Length: 311
Image (cartoon, rainbow, N blue to C red; front, side, top):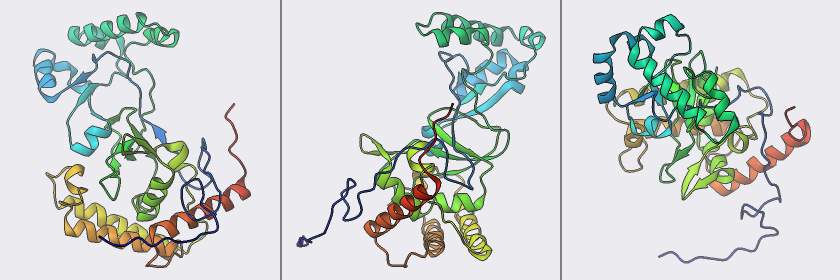
């Protein structure tokens, strides 16, 4: 057991760091230059639109015409653990086609009745559109998915690119129009340290949010194109390393014991590239990095001002 040596510091901030008294405030939008993060869609359908693989197989045997209206359904747990779920996605289904699918029609009827029975006026109003999810935020292009909740035992929150065919529910967060550069920054040790500093906790697990983890995050202000290209390359190496294990889930890949050496090496290269972009020394420890990120946040806040409330 190592001996702990007390250190005298000038100040201990609200994050229990020997640094400035800076508190990160929630923001409704990022400071600048990055795509917005949005929440997945809300269903409010009492299970009528959802299927396990077995349920879907039986349903399509009885209602084969419904196949064109089925999409993969993804939440945080599905994404991390590789669970398969599906849903009815009737956004563009014409009424005449709906009425030709009696089992789909019955499920839509059940959704309407469920919403009408709600004590919430807003939910009852949703009964007027029973074929649709309660709130639809689904992107029409590929996007980055970030789970809202992830185990604290992981060094990195598993995040990844998804196609627009995957319907994301509100247990996960999405960044439409994000690219490899954004992915590289977000999956880096710099952003992970920021997340551990300001993010919430669900029991002991990390709880990621757009308003406190993503929008106030101090992205680098100025950098040469060569640095951006370097991070795009290291980000791609992470994705390539994951492809070497097609049957592994993110829970398998990002467990600290079972994480493959090539994936760990790809992350280490990406971490080094991002730290260089921020002009952080290679041996910078986590507390020092967190303090520096707080100073960067404060500088951005002074430049861009407090968050403006949406009208």
